[in-house]
Image 1 (cartoon, rainbow, N blue to C red):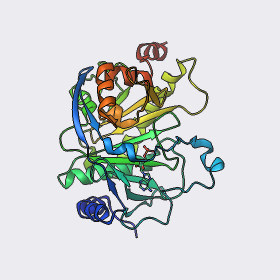
Image 2 (cartoon, rainbow, N blue to C red):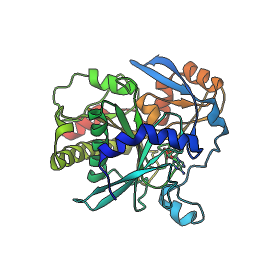
Image 3 (spheres, rainbow, N blue to C red):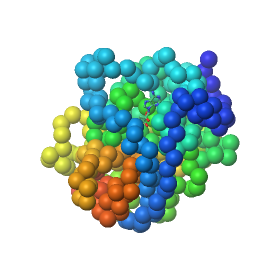
Image 4 (cartoon, rainbow, N blue to C red):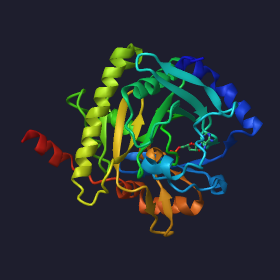
Length: 329
Ligand code: AMP
């Protein structure tokens, strides 16, 4: 029986406690460390208990189903009842979604919106996906809570599961950190993509209209799909400027708030930390300004190297000027 976004949001606090107490959801406590770089007050989350979580090799998504038929899909039924929050159905597009708690939670009430039928994590967000995610963010806001969403798309994006999943995380303040920079940026054309120039890597952002949370399906779908496609074009254009970029579908991270949509093209999944020689996996959370690290040593290494430089190493150089020149000619 499908539910509304508001019904999902309202049950989160109680359902989270129940899932945690049952042992079906594993909660890993963490501490937040501030790190100022590139005009952003980054929040690095240190979670030593994550060292105990088994590290899964990153699947090659396009061939994951064919190569790993024996590997169970955690986002396919049967669902663990304590992790299952309900379903959302989009009658217009004929799309169905399941909402699950993240089984391994670092932030309480971290939820996943997964497609009910298997779709690949290399596929772009579709208009109906964007509408459902945005509707969840809007429902949360109406109930006095603030969430943001992120999507790790493609082999180099930092995703660990090949079944299409968008993730939503509650915020305690007006973040995530990179969103504060977007909010403070003055733009001349509100309906055109822009770049956060203080960041040392390619990033493409669209501001969403202030009235969007109260709009109906059609307006939401049109606005979000237009914004997403405009940014995806820029991701593809950025990637084309890198002659060494691997062939195939480009990888990128998506960060969505009620106010902005951010797309960040990705060149690598991991960065080898200079101080430790060990790889650090970065996903959309890192680009939202909320990197996760697993030890004090890793935290010190990140601070020493600078998060902006690390994000640049796993992202791409901004070629915004070149792209604009090409568009003009
Ligand atoms: P990503 O690593 O970005 O692809 O996100 C996948 C998320 O799914 C991770 O944060 C995992 O903690 C979470 N996850 C893995 N297995 C399960 C499961 N069986 N049920 C719910 N969440 C899971």
